[in-house]
Length: 361
Ligand SMILES: NC(=O)c1ccc[n+]([C@@H]2O[C@H](COP(=O)([O-])OP(=O)(O)OC[C@H]3O[C@@H](n4cnc5c(N)ncnc54)[C@H](O)[C@@H]3O)[C@@H](O)[C@H]2O)c1
Image (tube, rainbow, N blue to C red; front, side, top):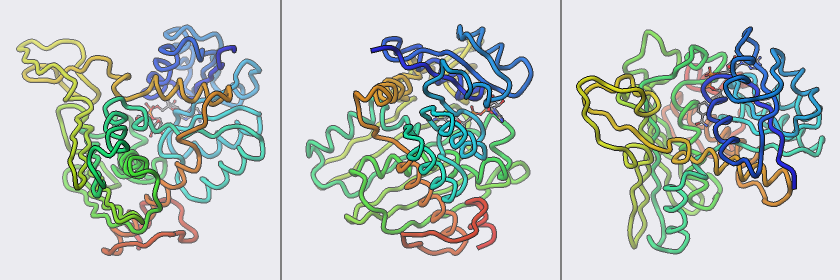
């Protein structure tokens, strides 16, 4: 069957990851277009990745007949509108995390894609990260007995682009940005059970001047089967991205450190080009990682999504996945605001952005 023709919306950090992922699975997909509003950026990106068509307006990309599947790598507050426009244009959608800002948007995105008969795929690469997939395979085999606690942490020194710090565009702080991964991870790892309650402690510890949202958070998710998920997030950990899991059952446990655990413990007095995402320096001790995208699962995710478009596989991360995460995000912010556990289902009305549930409980 022919390769799935991909158009990318956005041209910076995650757009590069997606372009790398598509190029890593040439038997399944190819890049045909990119759209980005800043003058020259789409053209530069197209040249860098060998893409034929570059647009400044994503709606022109949606009119491009070549494009079958779009990947949205724009700020969070734009995900819903771009998805709905793409669905109307008959394009399948891969949407970056978090799915959107509000639960109403999540519903509208899912409905628009359903109505148009296109796929809405949710880009949660942790479902494809080789170490984490191995941990899940062992758990599903029974290696740890009944798993009662799953922990996931994602921590770094703070976002690279100004819009992440602006809650109007991002919807919140470290939990919205990084916690969405951990929420999805715990839910997926445990076999997608119903969420019973959420407790979250959020604070601004270090970046009070810059962060409108939380820069530190611990979130506890209680699942219907009694198991717990613990999600730890920070924008205050220098030294490069820290992404790790711990899994505990009555018959065993496993630990996985996605990046540092696959790195070369390195000391250099003079430094070198690149170590790992968000590492500010390569002088002194550092942890240069190899096959970074593969360790995250980006190419494996793209292969799966392309195969879903061709009907060869069934999505394991879709709009519904994003909505589950979105509801837990709401509950986490509300919990931080009210200082108590929030029971699900949780669907407060009139929410403009999740962080409001913390700041104005
Ligand atoms: N899966 C992951 O691990 C991961 C990692 C990083 C970012 N992300 C997500 O990807 C998305 C983008 O993040 P990023 O780090 O690439 O941000 P970024 O700031 O590096 O890039 C954002 C891009 O969006 C473009 N953009 C802004 N307005 C636009 C519009 N109207 N139409 C089209 N493009 C527009 C910008 O020009 C820029 O190219 C966010 O939702 C973020 O949460 C996911």
